[in-house]
Length: 329
Image (cartoon, rainbow, N blue to C red; front, side, top):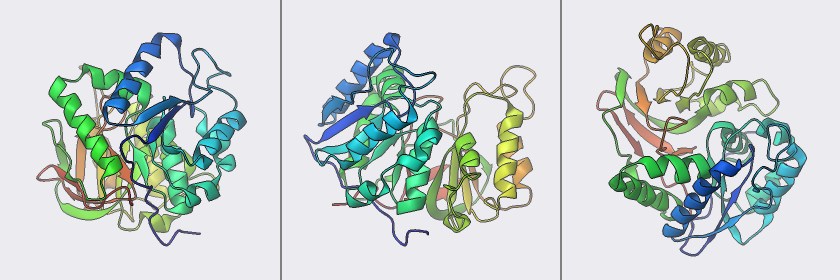
């Protein structure tokens, strides 16, 4: 059943509790300093910060911080705890598919909270959005993002990111235009408006093969955003073909592509085809605007992409604006 309304999380206020949790991958000891820096960033933004119990150095089960049931229990406890006002994923990984059937959807509906992260965490945006209308926050992870990539940015860039994220989480006014950069490219010109839907493309394609697939109707008039890390250029082409066969590309009105990261075949002197060529090849004669190389995903500090929020995209002018707030009173 498709939700008939957007479920915005409650806006945060200064002093609210934000919890960093291992919602997928484990914490390696060498990244503890990055996690500590992430805590400092959130505290500068005005929030109290707590680490969830599973977020312990070298605690792991296979490639995960714990088994899927344990992680789901911890996530559900955070969703049910009225003191917790936002949840930030420590890192991505390979685990969320293991507990999609264990998420407490009623807790989300009763007390919607921002869940921040990308990569595997895309599933914690897409599936709750499909089931409840919850706005998901495709935004930086704690350890590799706030405590890692943010620290490598110039001081002015860090201040801009902190202000942007604080505003996104606390303000009930639309942010408007996101800060553009010279990396943005117009791959197909045009202007459009619609709700943002997306995430890392491999998770988006795979979830459509499960009973937690987003109904096709949710892509009607949507602006699809996606990014990818690792693998081969041909994999990206294949994922896009999956979306084409699923009927998704026939329903969207625009596309935003993040900066690719470590994708074999897109880098080096023999790189061919380019990512733009791959995208346009699969789109064919679908005349929708496409904006490429936007800063979200694995390649570095993320501009936030709130799932479900209406945006204005002008690929020719290389602009992207959030037309609605992501949170509500």
